[in-house]
Length: 75
Image (cartoon, rainbow, N blue to C red; front, top):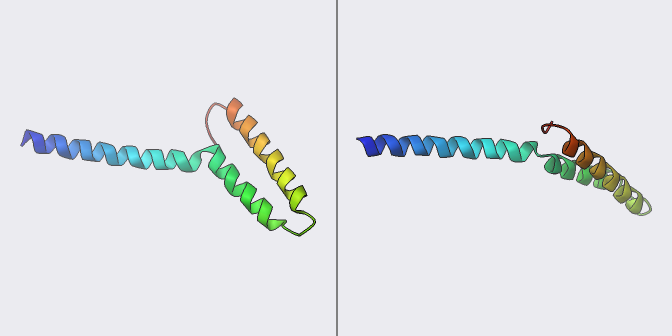
């Protein structure tokens, strides 16, 4: 009976851990940045504006990186 209890407890803990790690993954700045970069890149993707949109994306990535580096926790 003891082993069953321990097994169930560990199962619950691992499930909880996976859920929190998933949430952390979604909250990480670079995932959000990647989404915003891709959105920006494809939103302004004319033939002439590809270079400009790429530059803009890089600038936004840098701003987000600096913000996340110096803020205490991820937003």
